[in-house]
Image 1 (cartoon, rainbow, N blue to C red):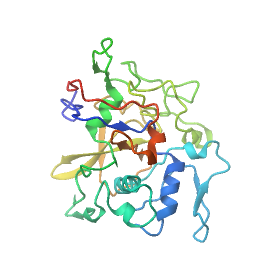
Image 2 (cartoon, helix red, strand yellow):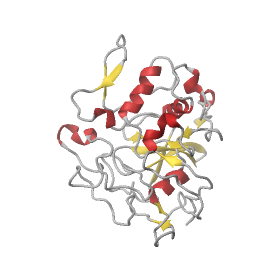
Image 3 (cartoon, rainbow, N blue to C red):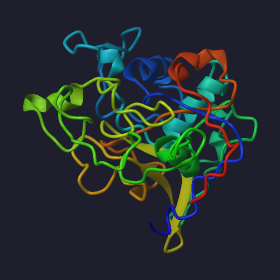
Image 4 (cartoon, rainbow, N blue to C red):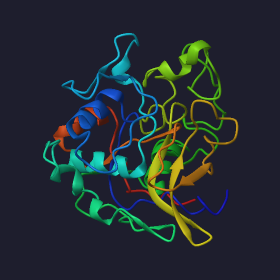
Length: 292
């Protein structure tokens, strides 16, 4: 282990995590409502939508040339844009500007001074949706409540599918995750979320490996400069350890990145506005100790 995850993973409450990363269809609804109106909205680098032009309504629509375009992951939202998406969900997907400015995170705090960001460190205690913390994410991906037999919890640390066997990366039907391989004409970027149904964490999370790596709420400070963390492998990188439990990275919250997306965490019970994302995924319970 290392000092980024040693002793981590203990969560003293129940919560839910999205079965997959945020999809194009979900992001497109949000983006169409606030493009040109809200600050910090970064344009996705890769997703399944097309820009119909400034005068079109709606501005973005699903690509007709990509199968399952609505299920493609969204790469490139900055941490701040991701936080605004959570605000929107918290506020029942209203379309007034206030719906993205507060709820889970207070956008008025977003800024920086001398390379130190001033963003609200953690979501409001009453948030209904938020960006997962490192503890929440690694528990959902690596902790198995039946690791040592029924009701005997423990940790997998080399993989995210309830084993310590490293994943085989490759296209659906050949591999177990969309990472560390290329297809002609960038075909690996057009593999929809949910295409690897047998690669699932003990709690039911899909696509924990591959597609985009995922933003976390947690902060790591290096040389006096704070950064938001992220977790997981992505399309073109897996062998570097992204799927090991200690494979944690970080970046500045305003920076959009081709390889970074996110999934949503939610309170229990999950509010109905976004329940479909969590269907089939049991609430992660804190009834057993989770620290290694």
